[in-house]
Length: 158
Image 1 (cartoon, one colour):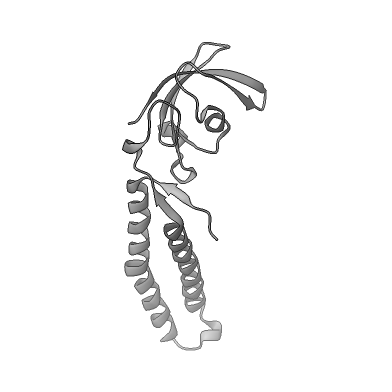
Image 2: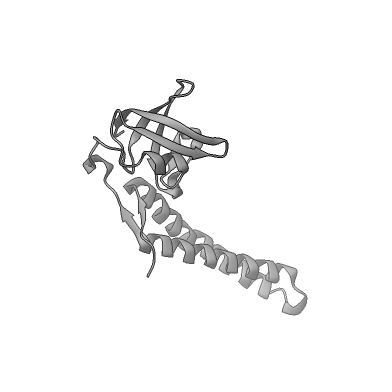
């Protein structure tokens, strides 16, 4: 049995569009490349044919992987989740109690994590430490240098 993976509607649509592109554009293109290389004669010494067959194998692996991801996908409607405690798709403002520095992160599935956009994986140490907490709660987060205490300042849904 496969593990369920949670996505936003937009992220799942992106996966479906990528799969559609691979099956309707890339797959026929590689088939044409293989046919053209085959027409050039002896396959045992045909580097173009070998390269096209290898590309086809890699493409089929990628298609299979996307199909598996989509089959295991579950869509989460973030607008229907409670905003009184930290959950998946919560945007959370936390404050480091040692230095007073505050940060804002959105907790997302691993597949949507992007630290440059302040989107951190639900399985990251910070996310694991603050999940289920409410405004005013404290969380001790284990980091390589030890433990840091964070206070939950604000929770919202964006």
